[in-house]
Length: 445
Image (tube, rainbow, N blue to C red; front, side):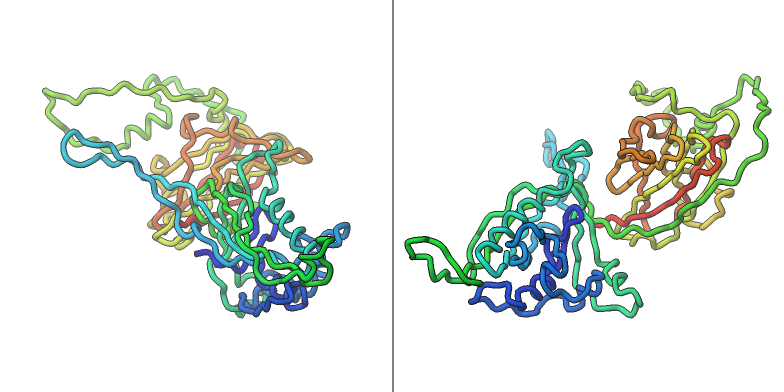
């Protein structure tokens, strides 16, 4: 089960046990409730926070100077989180005519996460304010605006780690933070019970309550759904700001007139191993080729490619998990970057890039055009491509992103804990000032 000490949704801290405990022990709690410090002891230091004092002084996530009740709310303390352990597995079944079934392809289903916890405050106004703040915060950051309705990132801890010896205590949390993508609220916070508190004016004719700590804490429950099933570790920076080595002059092009000249795809096909021969008198039936969509804008540059290769060391991901790359390419100020090709090679022997068989790549991604000074991101964690032009909003890069030979895109995955080499090629006449960066993100079940 994910740790209940801390988690945030869409960049907003929802639960922080250390923060709530500090505020409650300072008096923001029902007068009949006792709160003990049973949370992760060094959490504030590992989050980079000073010791917690009051919501107003600390500028707590819910604090609003225009709302006096916000200073009387101590926060949400999660007591249980279920459903976030392992992604559920789904597999179709088709009954055979005889005994048994035919199993379909395994796929990971969405994670349904049920959270239960306490809303603690020092007054009736404070706890009511906290309930409405929590409901609003769980709506997420996108709110189905122009960007997307796809949900937000949910970041949480797998456990409470001890304070490490690193001079920067925030690094102690890094190995234990996980992220779920495309998380949305599907059941709003519901009050399950009330704990502590006893309003002395409940039976009065006015029906009002005065006095600090007279209202109970609310025990609430809500449900989140993660559209992407994998739990992601924090990104590992492999390279950043790399530039291509320029090629020589490319003004002169020699055209081939050889009728037997083969394209790169045809050359790779010739290198494929010959299948085991069968009975020549009874050849297997030939299945018609299914036409695949392609895009004429995806083409190889005539003047040659410039190539930049990055080694991904073994152990980037455990052998029982896999990792996905996040490639960031920025076009130079001189003009757009054209005909970018990203190839991923399994390299268990640790060979130099120039010794790899160029037809042995595991996956290929082609990007036909990146505007001048724009940043293109191929995000394997969310399986989307983004183009960010200076001073403009993000836009989808799907219209310029293709798979091998301009066909459908197959997202690259790094498996088995072995070394990989990722090569980024581009039209040599357009690489001036362009840079490449690479991160890898481990995906867990």
